[in-house]
Length: 223
Image 1 (cartoon, rainbow, N blue to C red):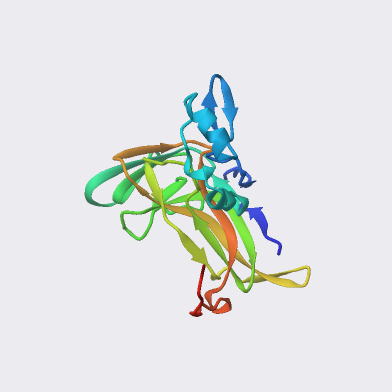
Image 2: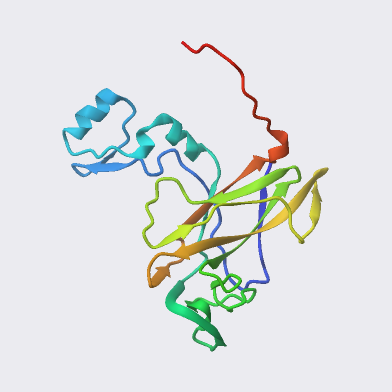
């Protein structure tokens, strides 16, 4: 199964290209000036004696999660400031306010705010534009969610699955694809957050539609 991506030339920004997730994401510990990845409990016990901190990614099933998907990144600087009450829409050359947030930083021509971050239906959520567009095979959905093992105390990344949208379908090498703009929806957890260019924002990977998967009970004597 093949995914494709392109850049949105309407945005006026230079996107950061997506990268494959690594099995080492979140599983590195620095001890005595070196990085270690522990693979066995015997090795873990040896490293723990030297200060190793056990990570969730030391669990093989959790580590397997890093074999799926691609990271997408911030295309530039986003500064998001939160207010205690909703505010009317006001846009200047330096910032844009609507709802609970004021947005500033790098400009983006396809954003409602004209900045890389923008409001989302006057809610407590924010949309961050990456400038990337993905093409996913019809019959699949494109999952987007938080990156495993990255602790983020500044904002929460919402998970979602795109099935299709109004951008239509495209025929590539005899297969139909639908187009998805890779905009990441976040909920800020602090009154002011700053997202720099190259900041990892989310992961994406294709998933089967629910109609393709059946779950039934089977009575078994598990020993």
